[in-house]
Image (tube, rainbow, N blue to C red; front, side, top):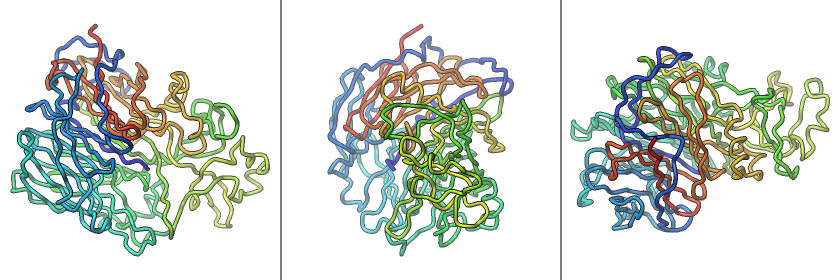
Length: 507
């Protein structure tokens, strides 16, 4: 999987909205500027290398600098002058070699740049957070966190830095560190608290009944959990963390520094007209059809907003398999045995133009334990979803809108139909004028989509825009923080090392 983390400016995610899920009424905007969120256009770009050269970016308002993870044969953070976003210019770099870690994510707050580093000595060992001064790039602090910190973010009040520490195993599973979440208290000399999931292991059976996933190869509940991405509430008291491979979201109380809940996300039914998907890369066409298949949401990116004092989190339902020498949970449908009673037409379904090429989860779907599949379970939901942040209950799912809209744009990659489609990976919820706006980054379709989510139960599609190859990071810079005093969207694409800057028209 191509990894994702999105460094959000805290002011960009302050959102208020509607009286309830069904009937939204706009309130006073955070920033009064008359922009049209359906009209983002590219105004500038810069290429900083080849594949892996432009992964994640963060912006510093004080210096008007953009800091971008560059792993294209290097181990550095590139520093880009964004004073004129139509002509972004690379002006420096931070060499990370001496820190014995490779960067996965960056975030900025009030003149501080925080970088998440996985260990290059032992990937399954503890990682680091390294904090730099954005003005002179001098080192402020190094902090030890859990294994493989994959995403990093500051809290909106600037008091905390959080990391999602994925804790992936090595290839033979001889080392499988616990997945953890680290909370760094900046005002307490960067004291760190790292949370694991051991205390929640007693919930494993109940969670699995609701669609939470624990691998059959797991050494323990805590070791199997793999935190992926973090979003923090506007009051800096609550965080939601995606557990991608586990098909869940964890809720964290920052005040008590405890994990208070795990929300199992369940399954999506692809056997309906609205959820119809394209499942074959060998049929010489893009064809959306209902199939008797379920999809695990398995979100990567997550963002949040608030409507009528109700918190919502938004997920990019990418999906992800585990593929190691000792264990793999992915296999083509044609190579699996289907229950003859449930699937009397199994031979037809296994044809490559039908379901034969679709990648399925190998250790799910045998509901009666007789060794064949009674259900077919795929990776990801090919959508974004909005969930109630208090209950974890789904409020809205985009169904097959993502794949269909990218087909209309001409960027849908039919070669990915057998896997996870457009692979929604990034979601960024922001406030523009009186509207709550959502940006969705699509790694495999080389585009981002824009929706008005002022009514969380009924988002309105606004726009699809082409990006560079394999967009990995999506960063919103609100007008109040922007060098031009106009809202900007910065998209970093790891496939071609390109950073593109977009700006909306005025109304």
